[in-house]
Amino acid sequence: MRIGELSRRTGVTERLLRYYEEQGLLQPSRLPSGYRSYAGSDVETVRRIRSLLTAGLSTSVIAGVLPCVSSDGGFLAPTCPQLRADLAGEHRRISAAIEDLQTSRGLLEAIINGKPRAGHRSAGRRLPRRGPGRPVRRLRRAGRPTAVARPIPAEIPG
Image (cartoon, rainbow, N blue to C red):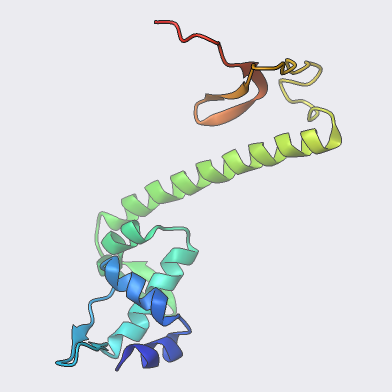
């Protein structure tokens, strides 16, 4: 089938199907005219790609995962022994990102409300004022932004 037919059957744009090919997720054959020709199984492959993208995986991770998953009653199931451990690592990465986003949301809420969050370590502290020529930077500890902003030194110690 040609790209337009695959697009209609999967609901994925032709441009996105070309992108999946660039990323190595789809391998259509080429007709003598240069047109892409997709197999019937590519419909299911595109559905798997969409499911894995929805699960939060990047296309580079999906390229490694795709050969090791099968559809089992409408659900994707791992078929390679190492895949479960790799996906657990991705789960930890996504969980850490969610935690960072929740922290950021709480800090933003505190700014919107004009007061620190209750029970937050910066509650009751004032943030340093920012003067002319004194940009304020956010410190990061263990991958998480802190609520205290500090000025960047004018000279870098060396």
